[in-house]
Length: 479
Image (tube, rainbow, N blue to C red; front, side, top):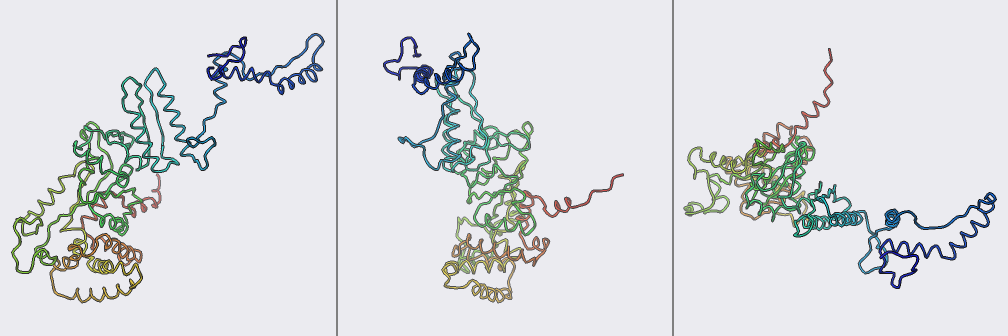
């Protein structure tokens, strides 16, 4: 209720409205001895001596004047909203800009939720700024809940712009818009080539480590840790640095790479256009050379191969059948800006050995076998390296086919006796060190690398040497 000057103070000030409390406070201030004394001194000692005869000047001290709306606005503008710990009567320490941003967003949502007319619309730019990663996830889930239709209430539409994979991973694909080339591409069901089961799968497995694909200029989707570790190093060797090209690698762990690829494929590209972000899927052929089963211990020498076996060898296919098998793998995910690159022979590590990096892989496997001892400093990596290079010289002098040599190098990884991930780390280090010493030219590196890896990298990157040459070229003379 309002404050009535004629009636005086209410029995319970809590019953007053906000404006009534302001008017009540104003009345109390006007009667305060400090203010009345200052007013009297102002009038008697100063204004009276500055007045004309018969026209005295007189001052009055007040808090707010004007109509009710003006007084209420002035009162509300004096209020301050601050964060404090629940149940505490003091301001908290160590509250940063992120917490203040949350306070501001909460106020805006409160204001929008109380609107009686129109359709409330909230735009938030980069809410991840200054915000703890776990707070980001909590914020995004809260915003999605607030944007859900509520019976009898006012729905709020919320538009968030972000560069945070953390936030993107917490948003339903149906609610995501990918902005690229000045166009907005909805990732909602019916707008992409994703099936209903794809959406359910991605809702479970599209985490922050994979959501960086939404912000990349190019994407490489791989099936394992070895590719995840080695591809960036290989790209640097052929002057196709992934970071310079804005390329993200998404490791899907052996399953589902086609589901991730279809995120970038439009349902109606003729009408909506295509997403101009190149995507390369790197897949294994998973077909062994005929010599491999005995070498890697699938069967014993002279033993019949088991019926119903899950592994395949080249002789299982008729002439041209392996090529058709590769084409079938490509067809599962390729289309629009997405291209699938299938291993030339078997797996990444085998193909590296087969193409010309057998010595480097042999050395990396030797180091990976002794990784625990190297880490504990019970053996020296230089000693392991010297012995491995001696063993390689003996091994390289043995007469055997290229398939057999590559299979024997790869065997410890195929058997699982040595970690592929640890081997990949050592191999990446060996290749990077060789690249930094300029022991091979770019053309020589391409000659000893599997073609499919080179082509996959080239699909998503810019030729930096050509781009730099164009940039450095002098302008042509003008007529």
